[in-house]
Figure 1 (cartoon, helix red, strand yellow):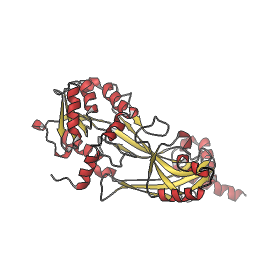
Figure 2 (cartoon, helix red, strand yellow):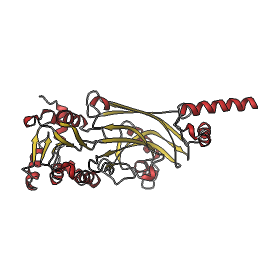
Figure 3 (spheres, rainbow, N blue to C red):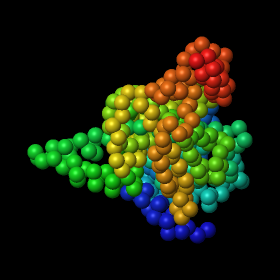
Figure 4 (cartoon, one colour):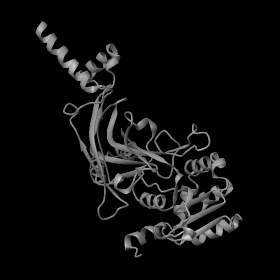
Length: 369
């Protein structure tokens, strides 16, 4: 099977040892996988595992240490040769078989099925430059019907934020005000997301789930497009300068089924090499506490490069769109709805009923006047 030049470039990029140094030294990332694998030792003992995109082979070794009887470590790049050396260094040649191939081209002996698939496939904001499609292929080709995925679900979150790390220093650059330059810089950066660490105090409002995926059931077409239209009330006063994206992944707990291990990459979590992704606004906006922030974000897979997504942000008029039930913003309608919900808890969650009742009460009040 032919591999196009874009795919070749992608695989070659993973031959850079610096990339793997960053991932190996990413303690939240690597420890989450180790903890999840070792928490399921009773399940993995004497099982067959596939590691999709094994890189240096460390996740395969975790599986072998947890008692797997066979691990197929699949790596498309030339890093497969290094993985073989690492496997040998750890004396697992009899358990781990490194396969230098794209998983799409792999054929296992006797067409056997595996009990678990382990893969660190995530990219920036979960999907960018990720290898989720390959994980789906591996699942459909090799995973038993009752097999498990590590991780098995993932969620992308979005929240409004300030970005002082990009702009605050320009207020006093060697004693010179450079706000004009900062404005042009902000405008230029609004065409491409920034990858940086957002401090917890710079998140202006509560996060909302942009999307949730189930690796056991989703397919490639299910992750082609995501969209959110949302209103959030600012929880603090500040400069609204962008929208922050991050993700969480949850691993299965096959043994106890009640102690799920997660890998979280948000501003309030220990930093990872994914950091956070920020969509920079062309112009900042000062917001007050409880001021509504409304936006629409469209995330669509690029038709020319399936590993990339196009993000299109539209700022909305908070008074022109529907607010979620329980919105704490300072608009009169949301204040009325929250007051009504306090007095009518049986209507909680039924936005149509709540809105209709408030309209009816407003009409009655007008008649009484």
